[in-house]
Amino acid sequence: MEGNVLIQNASLVLSDRIVDGDLRVSNGSIQTIATGGGLEASNGELVIDGTGLHLLPGAIDPHVHFREPGNTDKEDLQSGSRAAVAGGVTAFLDMPNNVPNATNRATLEAKIALAESKTVNHFGFFAGATRNNVSDLQDIEGMDGVCGIKIFMGSSTGDLLVHEQKDLENIFANTGGIIATHAEDEERLQQRIAEYGNQTDIRLHAECRDVECAFIATKRAAALAKDHDHRLHIVHLTSATEADWLNKNKGDLITTEVCAQHLTFDQYDVESLGVRALMNPPIRYTEDRDTLWKRLKDGTIDCVVTDHAPHTLESKSVGYPNAPAGMPGVETSLPLMLTHAMNGKCSINDVAKWMCAGPARVYGMKNKGSLIEGYDGDLTLVDLENRRTITDADTWTKVGWTPYDGMELTGWPMYTIVDGNIVHKREAGGPLRGTPIAKPGSTGRVLKFN
Image 1 (tube, rainbow, N blue to C red):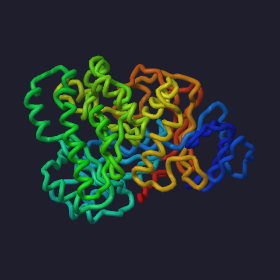
Image 2: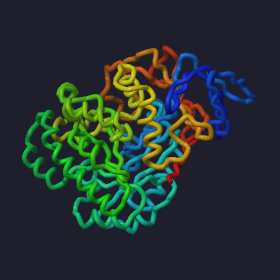
Image 3: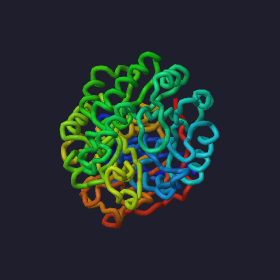
Image 4: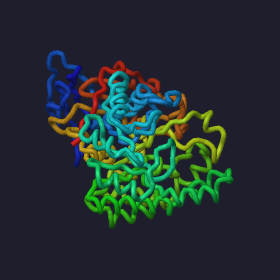
């Protein structure tokens, strides 16, 4: 059911400024933004007092692995959606490396049907590219709920891999929409794994999957995009070398993203966190982290994501290099980035640009990502006045842990609103987990893409 809600006395985070005022959502869409306030409640309208809170557009996480179908012991669409809205994320895009992989219309229709019955926020899915499924990719072009094509150019988690030049050329030449690439060079990657494969020191992970491994693939993907005039999105950028090169070479066809953890952690955190910080591509070095911030601020990097990729701590406990790569993050990314803002790394408006408007623009999501009259009523009211320490026990992800365990963060969502309906809330001073409001399937909606 579409919602009607009036938020009064909040600090409204608009695209270019923050103003005090009221905002009304009617029938699921933002109807009125009143700077300075003054809106009166209508009959049947839910009223929220936003005094002391900042109202942002709902965050959009365009890079998650919710593990369904196939690995629902780690996460499923219901638990992942719950975790997302607990973190102020009102829309997500899920990756295709499932069991079975989402590589054709039938597997994508099955995922969409599952999501419609389980989620409490908006959703879209990537189609996975294989060496021989171009006809399947052509068949799903323009399909509601399908945001683009994902190519794994280097081995990661799962068995989707396309790295031969002729296969990549075929995909870029004969498909439409946006191609998102996991850019690591398979040939160099296998050489490095052979060299480092017996090492048990996790600090060597960034040398095993080194910067050159990523840079070769990034340049190769960019050349394919330009040769075939094809939109390209490079996922989870990790290195200063790539970011600086893209600053001069990305052009209009290419966009890119950075994970919140790559803006937060460096080699010292990898040493202290161990396998909790193990992911592909790796957490790198202080200079990489600092350059990623620089290129995010100058517009080279378009959005901030999580690559939410949960694994159980039991599976992680086997240690490096055999532990699975990936970490949860969808429910902590917005507070984490808002904490960076409050610590002076960026502005609150920057966070809204990178986590709301940016993903909507990259993937062509109509009427999302900004507080604008006529846009969808997807909102989050956050508390920037109080810092709370998160622990593993506070998480909604099915794996029950966070790499930020013990960190003090601010910007926790007090209300998460989807189409004008409250789907999650926290009480001031109450449990950090908060309370789910919406029932699974009641407020989830398939996304449409330009």
